[in-house]
Amino acid sequence: MVKNQLITWGNFLFRYRSYIPIPVLFIGLYIYYVSLFNSIDSNFFNYSMMLSLTGLLIRIFVIGYSFERTSGRNTKTQVASKLNTNGIYSVIRHPLYLGNFIIWLGISFLTLNTIFILLSILFYLIIYGIIIFVEEEFLRNKFKKEHEEYSKNIPLIFPNFSRWKPPVESFNLKKVVMNEKNGLLGITSVFYLFNCIDFYKTTGYYYEKNWIFYLSLFSVLFYLSVKIFQKLK
Image (cartoon, rainbow, N blue to C red; front, side, top):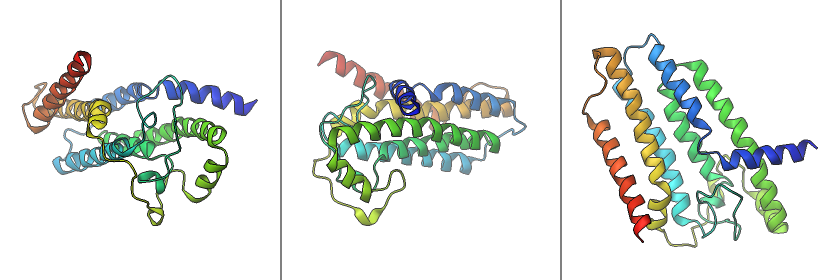
């Protein structure tokens, strides 16, 4: 009964996993807006963004070397034509969710609120823990013995680099661009929103044309260009 309920919840969370963090994000923005901090240290801001971009790079590596019909942005149901066991999947079973966690951690740090950071980490672990449970169940049922042997040797979420095996697929840049345009847009937009709040609290103006503004603008134009290309092809 409990297992069936977890699977039901997991399928729901898997389908809407891209939207679930949005309410938490707005809470984080509000917490920083009403906080007593008047400015985010520029070095801290840059380190936080580097952390989030590191998470995006992990996602890019995973997507770029993944097989077809796996590790994409599918939302309706689980998809796996074969079991990934090479490349980054040779050191960790769920690298995409590790990348997502690192992205989220970098964003959470910007609130400068320890309680929010800890609660958002807990929220992430609960939500994605349920999703991972469902994915593991799906892979176990589909690949049976192969998945059993794989899961015995490869850790769930903490990488074991001693198990590394080179990717068997060539890096697919087109696949990365089509799938990860959202991630780049999301990260730059969120960091720019925090920057706008920071600028407003210190100057009373709503925005400034700095490097994060131009990076966000590039991300928007890049996203729109890819979307137009997808519509035209």
